[in-house]
Length: 257
Ligand code: ADP
Image (cartoon, protein in one colour):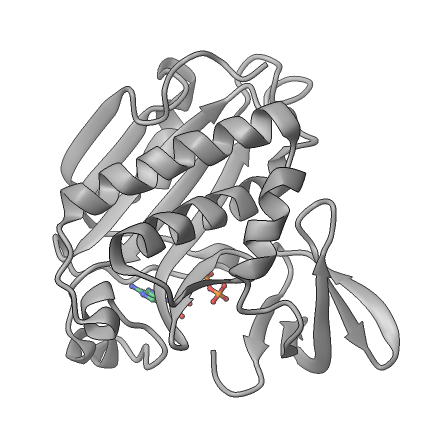
């Protein structure tokens, strides 16, 4: 059973921190389910596969949410649930055009606007056992200029402002993401991922596309077919169905992102 408590019901705000995910991984056992940790600046923001997340301070929104009591069977789909929630909230505020790039990026016109990093600390027997929890980290580029991303050698990154022309307010975006997260997370806990799958498919920048799968320092060309029951990407590569898991591979569209 997921523990009681609203997503974002308890909130900690830091002017500067290494990484909001790392903070929750280190302190999550003492904090209630749903705790949100926000930071104006992250000095050691992380992405998947040991990559880093570039931060520019208060023109980007960074926060992590603590999830307690989610069964290990549900854990692999948490990134997809988070992706649906963040994508829906950005569409609600800024209009259509935001898509989910597998496994957990939000893109707009081929530019990466948001990265999501879900991590877990497994307890004695399962996440339901003592000490187990998950952490969902969300980084949304709000209003950095393209020159910031160029200086970080991130030509495929963009902010809400550079892509949509609208200057977003961090507090408003935070509240909307929390609202959708609470709604979609509760649906997921009660009914599983199937009620969210149609929305995921509709918003996917990856499914049905030709992709390059980058793993073990080699590139394979294929077609992304569907999302597996555990969030894996099922691709057709050389006539064979291959399951790609997010912990091992990156997927790129054939033309850039
Ligand atoms: P991917 O899924 O694209 O392989 P990750 O989810 O691991 O990547 O996110 C980390 C990557 O995101 C980094 O390697 C970098 O390319 C990119 N990145 C880092 N900071 C930002 C940012 N602020 N905005 C957009 N992209 C970023």
